Length: 270
Image 1 (tube, one colour):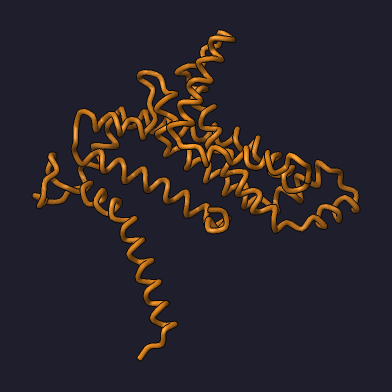
Image 2: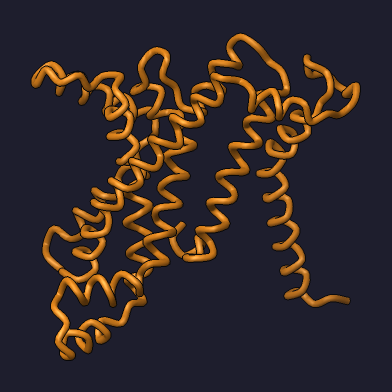
């Protein structure tokens, strides 16, 4: 008879397997729907085809939204990195009475619901445009500004994870050998924490690329990101091309996450 410890391990593995299956069920059904042959989804399927992937790629609305999401994600990631890197270095190396408050403030976008964050950003941009006269509402840079707030928390968190294992005696050795602070930072510090920087950029891009809630409040008419384009398409038509586009979007995000995990284990920061 198996002992209680083995039974407990089997029960834990079984519960974990059921949880993973429950999480993956939507992805399984979306992938299955994307290869239906008929235009109107019905069960059982009349056959299977990959033509909906070609239809999704050939759709100008989806292509335009894809490039908009990519551009917003890349620019927001670069700006977020410019803010997150010095912030992470300061939080790691200097201990002051506002250290905890600043750390919590940088991670706040992860806590605030996306709808609340998007509405707050919209109100802020409206008030800013009224006060300054700058054309912010519905502009490309207005969307980028909102997505920067999505990028910063993950980038800070991943860079801090790399800094936690960084040996600062390497910097002291470089300075003792005649290197100034800038050279030390460029040739010693950055290469040592480069995995965290790359992982932070990738994870930040993923959070921006797949965001729907914030983008809904900030886009202008005729300017959409990929998640919004999928939502708008579903308002008028339901066919497997939407499922195909969704699968391709999931594939892009999955590849980015796998690359991220090669640099910094995601389990260390989430």
